[in-house]
Length: 124
Image (tube, rainbow, N blue to C red):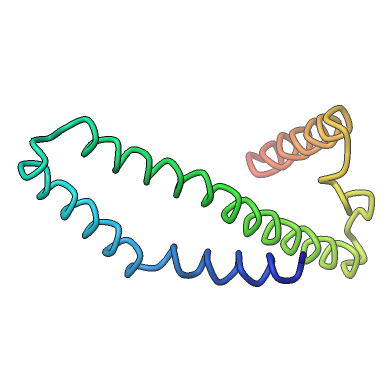
């Protein structure tokens, strides 16, 4: 099931992120707007577009989130590989995304200090 969803979400994300998907969505909106006078801009006419877009948006959230989660994990692994392979790098930064907020704040303060030192050496 996971593999099917992964493949489905990947293909769906590619498809709905394409220019053709945008053009198709724009076309649907234009057709819907053009039918307004035919249906006398009724509540039902408005409800059709509202319900349709809500359902599509609801489903797309899950597909987009899945794609973003996969991309984020892949990027983290690639960065971890770079850190691990670089002899001068601090290996305690590997899996930084799994650290607590407090641990991340400590690293952030360390890097702010390094940044200040770098600025001071450039001024000299």
